[in-house]
Image (cartoon, rainbow, N blue to C red; front, side, top):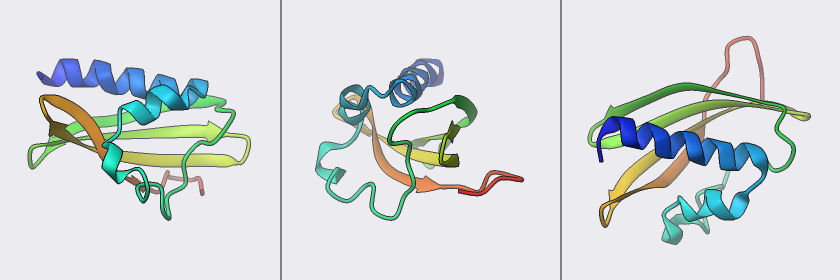
Length: 104
């Protein structure tokens, strides 16, 4: 999948998270990782007031997406690491990143 196609997939995924469509968001993830992928990671779990995609890049054959979500509880910097699985990009891991001037 070309980088532009991945960016479109990532934008759709971020939109699903922001709109609360967790069924669609979870479908984009590596299913066998779901039991533990959220451990220790802050993610939007309800209302999202704002979204800013900060970066989409390739590192060591994986796609990395970084988005800042603004929620009533605060600002969340969320990085997702995507792997190619059976010809489809799937989010395999999540981690938080520090947003300048903001805290989780």
